[in-house]
Length: 244
Image (cartoon, rainbow, N blue to C red):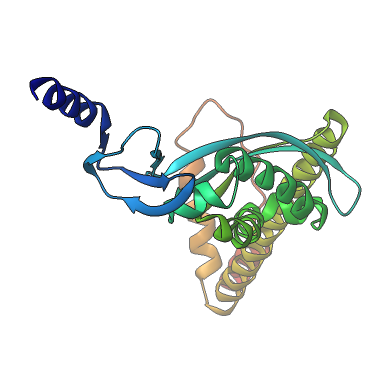
């Protein structure tokens, strides 16, 4: 009897399996799925039963660089990171052999297909939209595996050297264009202000004389310069009227 009790205790101790809080256990009996095991200590009797633990935490998969050709025939290398989480542990084990590898391969294929649907300018300007499209396609497929895709982020887009030079020249031309537009706008505003000032000076009696005296006062403070001053006709005519 003591021997039998000892054997039973040993079997029970050998049958204890711990499922952590972030895990779920997929339990099989005689090769047949029977239930999903919650966290805690559980009895899994050897030979008759088995259990596969599934990590339910969010995982980040680094999708390696994929060479794709855009719709306008530009070759580019793109890499991304995909965040996913197991939503149903039983499906993740029963429906796909290796869900981590399957998600990775699915993301690579989808990324090449989506990039092929976009022109280069669209890809560079709307990376978030491209990533969203990849997420939607991958999520539809992985849903049957019990996997929920949370987000996809395009990390880097590498272009050929000649294409990088072309883009750099385009950016420089665009900057020069904006600079010319800003400079010309400033000149237009300055011309308008000068025209207004000239109109005011010509319409107000004596205003031009005061402005002339002001200018003389400003330049007379520096005695090291020789000043050639042109007297406006209005001043000479004023003297003529006074003498007459």
